[in-house]
Length: 459
Image (cartoon, rainbow, N blue to C red; front, side, top):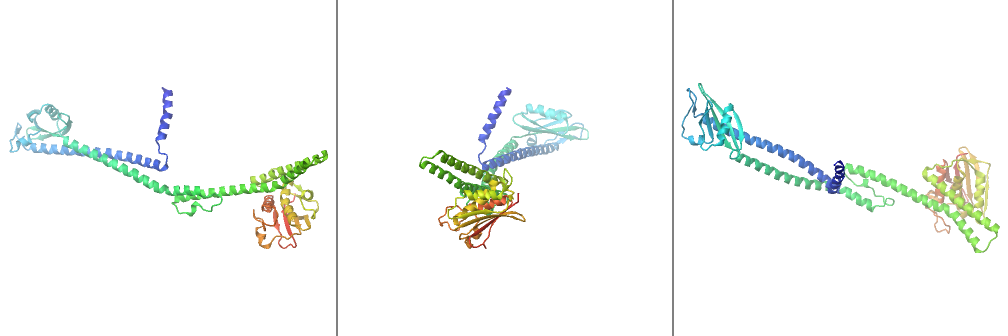
């Protein structure tokens, strides 16, 4: 039996869940309807109880009035009780019993079983009322009549059918009124909740139509009630965070694509060169070495950018010897043959990992090799706040109108200058320098050519 009850409860719960409205509007309307039904039930029961009590009280008042009228026809001044005859005696004797010292003096014709009820009521003495179910609902009340030498009791009876009919009419009327009120309550609640939730539906449609990244529309720009205004503000904050995350994701994807393009091009070039004709074992070994170095460079690039994306702190902090790193970068730089690339400076250490230093300097060298006419100079020196690295070329320099947009992602001074590029290298280099506690600047007063200065903490 216990197992059966445990199985029945989940089934009943699931059934009730299926019956519950699916929408918030329906659930709120159901709650309002249930609350109103309970309140109206209590009020209806209380109203009908008071109405029945009031009707019974009216019946008792009428019985006592009749008993008082009958008492005027009873003479109790002598030693015996006498009932006087009056002109309306037949009317007064209807459903009336008169007792003297416990003896029945008069009773209505064909009283039958009611006389026994009246006898019992008179036997108790005093003013009492009872309800009897003989030949329909009847109400009987006893009224004592005191005299100087004798005492009498008058018992009157009254049919309760008219009063019960009135009570039933009141009950049906109140139930009908309750039904109308419940229907109106449900309809008005659904209407009010629907109007209140209309802004939510509008916000839902707007969220479906808007693009989290491209659209500048926000929920907080529209006037709403205070609760929905707070909700709109929270949703706007969420949209801003989503837009920031998506922008960072796109930025990371673009930067990885930009940085991996060079080593990937080296791998493709080496494979194309190796496949054009048979090679000796030494040439094949050299090709493998170049491919391995490019693959290791790609791995280093991925690790460096992902470390920065996780929060700007490298997973392997350390120091880098600046001059050997600069010379290694100039050796692997894919620069035209007419360019002279030099790197000089005293032995210095930067307080960043070697891989991060390479990622900061590589975009500067790549840009310089694109635009320099004959010479690129890389110079490192000590500064009061750390170390500095200058990358100088003798090219055309940066157009003055474009200098303010130089470090903005995706911006190029002249996209049609014949050089490939996505405008991501310099913004990435500056961001990495700043994440390491340094800075990257461009010197607009340097002529001819361009001069970039990287400031880093000393190792």
